[in-house]
Length: 152
Image (cartoon, rainbow, N blue to C red; front, side, top):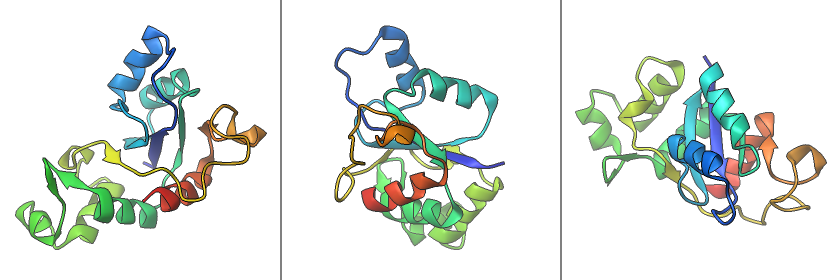
């Protein structure tokens, strides 16, 4: 089963209550928060409800490993090889690979990942237009990996 990376890129001003509630259920309460979800119909429905405030796409294994290494947390502690060994994994890479392949649950990590704004900014039209129109919102497929690389 593939994994989806979902990033909140718009703020809270003027959001309808139902969209705000959906973002809370996705655990995207703040700007530049990222969650990784399984590609299920339930998650896709929630993502489509909030598509005017987020961007998402299929995350690759290498990008997911970098995300876990640099921004991963277990509880309030930053993840490192010692924490991974406490969870009975060899190291952080083994933890990330087992989560990505489905051997371990995503609940091991504390979500969301807190990211910084992207280096060199968003796409040309900014955060008010869809990705297909030259903006940043909505579905971007494998392009999410490039954006995550700039935000890690």
